[in-house]
Image (cartoon, rainbow, N blue to C red; front, side):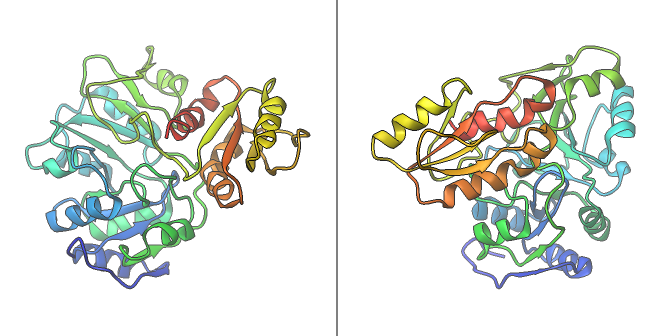
Amino acid sequence: MCASTQVKMEIGTDIEKAAALSLSGMLVAIPTETVYGLAADITNETALKALYSAKGRPADHPVIVHIGEKTQLFELAENIDDDTHKLIDSFWPGPLTLVFKKKASVSNMVTGGQDTVAVRMPQHPLALAFLKAVNRGIAAPSANKFGKVSPTTAEHVADDLKNEVAYILDGGTCDVGVESTILDMASSVKQILRPGKITASMLEEVLGYKVELKEKSQVRVPGSLSSHYAPVKPISILSSNNLENGIAQIIKSGKGVSVLSFDKPEAGECHWLEADKNPTNYTKDFYSNLRKLDTFDCDTIVIEALPDGQEWTAVKDRLKRAAQS
């Protein structure tokens, strides 16, 4: 599929059709437990070029390889140690991506020209069925335009990439709602390069030692840019104490505002979405809520600052980057 070709998109649950299209070099979207991924065969450079083109993704920004069998990891990665086995036994399939030194056979288009490769085995049953059907590694970054709000439903994918995707496997709404945790296994010190549902304490329980979150790393990984996951309209993050006054000042200036907060603001007329106080539910709804806030007739978006705690770390990271645009 060449980069400029528009395709007729279908949405459905036909695993065999999706797999056949992918193996022919077409782009398909697959549901995972985190977000929907734009799937391309890592052995097909034409498909990989189409993926980067469809997303508008920089060539040096690596993608995660998704596998349907744990044994496929050995075809992609070097230096698989005992800690790796502990982690994949505990968290695969699931929302944990591991970064290794890559095998020479892994394309530089997958790794962004680095000597490392990021790999995960997703948990969603349709994703696993698709991966088993294609029987090879699949690059599957989020199925949206680069830097924009990630998709958690098939409809989100269709809104963003309707002219680039041949088939969307509809697996409903993603259960987790933000991208996977990324853990560096290639360096001497194992560190989290991107927070996700699998928290530091969960990793520490399995590994038996401290795991830190690294804010900046020499290893480039998806979602690490300071500005990412952004809606069209600008976002302001306001503390609970400053929320009412901040909204009032925006309204006073003549601007329309949409708000995501735990309680309904009383500062004036605005478009309001109630934020779930449960961190799991808040995270699951986050990208969908960003999209809704962006559709309101407003000039700016205000989001109430989130509480502390490891269970909020991943979504706080996404919120911070979304507000940097």
